[in-house]
Length: 197
Image 1 (tube, one colour):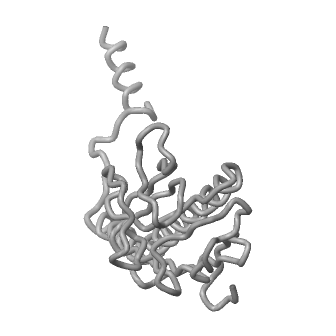
Image 2 (cartoon, rainbow, N blue to C red):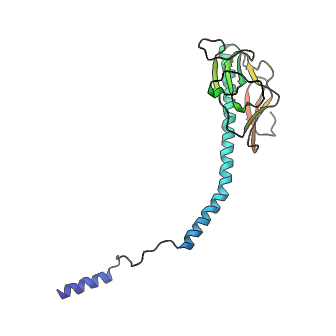
Image 3 (tube, one colour):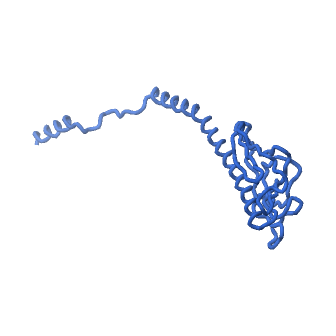
């Protein structure tokens, strides 16, 4: 019996896989160093991420406007008659009124069948049916035409009935901007500021 106890003791002493008496963890210095490195990386990366998000938001706004003008133009050709896109405040809440009190289109727009002098409506079978509506953009966005234009009407040939405003300037927080140019046929395209329309 004595021998078995000595063998068991000797085995425990020589066992390489036994747990040490004290478990290791992070020291305070290691923890402070890690937090400092993470804070530096965050300080460097956050502005770049903010700029990336702002540029993507601006591109999305530009694409929505171009899509709305393309819809207006294609509907005019398909319906063989006038279709209008007009500035509207509260379009997302159901307002069916074109707004001529300002020139910034950041508050949204309506696309409807008819000319700028017609009143858009959602009534089924109406001659001036609303085809699409866009609500207000995020705070800090501006969308201003080169000349005061509160509506653009396309004819059956897909051309603007009156001369389009030339271009719209999109900006977000005055840091980033894009231009949406109109050619005489009514087509639109986005360019960077400084490029010729």
